[in-house]
Length: 170
Image 1 (cartoon, rainbow, N blue to C red):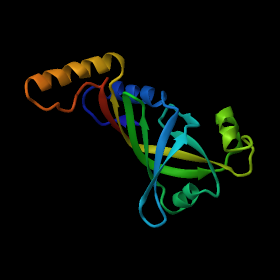
Image 2: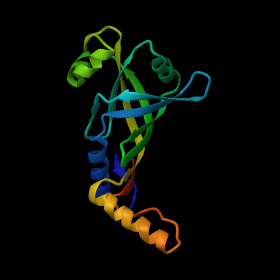
Image 3: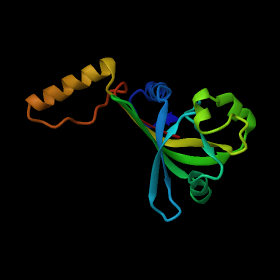
Image 4: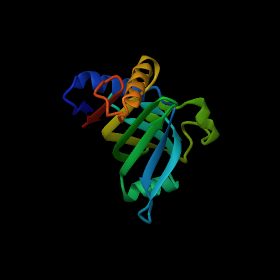
């Protein structure tokens, strides 16, 4: 992914990828066979250095059928004070070596193991992403901005600080 913002694009991209790798779960939103939107929580298998996200699924699941019809998807990550939203393309992948590489023991709740015949991978290739980070020092800075806006009777504006907010696109 590359940053589309003018202010410190490499810093924004690096911060985006660093933040993305902190999440363990996400909400995957696909288009249903009827045309609506369907979101569901997913455990993250892996986040690659380029922002590609891997999930595990049953190859006969509703997700697999939805992806076969429409590969566009949205993935949303949230923690108490950090958020990432990405749009991109999903692909259903059958790759035993990759399944072994990203296997985590908690996945055994859904699958017998990385060689389970029902297991398939979902590869999410992001096209655009946006993050908000209100953790630690960034959160303190944002709290001061919010307090200042409140005391001055103003609304808080979007922040141009790449530590707090940024957009990236392929």
